[in-house]
Length: 114
Image (cartoon, rainbow, N blue to C red):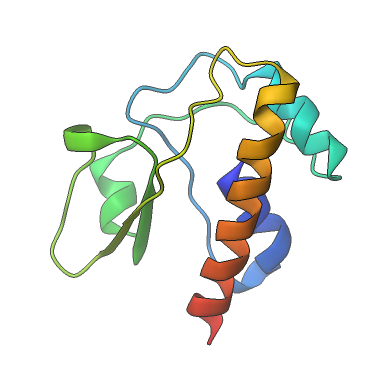
């Protein structure tokens, strides 16, 4: 959701990568539905594994419960967003998570483009 919001709101002003330390086989259908409700279609997305190369190529790394599984490199900015995991949740539970991620992404964009 964060990558989708960032790509949507920042357009081509920020390069976005999305990956997880233990990605699911597919995107949670409730997440797809919740994002469709705000006009963002992520139905064609597939979860990707986080690679060392992706972190090395990034200036800012947003983690969400990654813990020790995420590689850490000097000089990178790391933000850990503690949020409920939408895995296995229905759309009712996903909506407030989506809305919090949206708020955080808007703040991040303001910081990065300032």
